[in-house]
Amino acid sequence: EEEHRLRKVAANISKEVKKFW
Image 1 (spheres, rainbow, N blue to C red):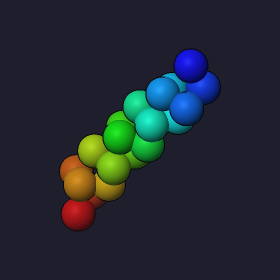
Image 2 (image 1 turned 180 degrees about the vertical axis):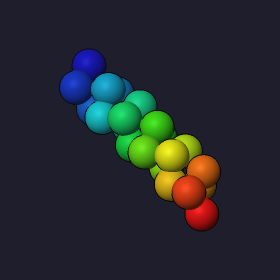
Image 3 (image 1 turned 60 degrees about the vertical axis):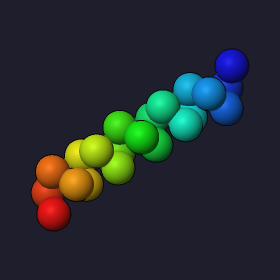
């Protein structure tokens, strides 16, 4: 499902952001 995949990508991005901050 497209929306589910997008949500997963968004979660990965937020994880990366937390690493940097």
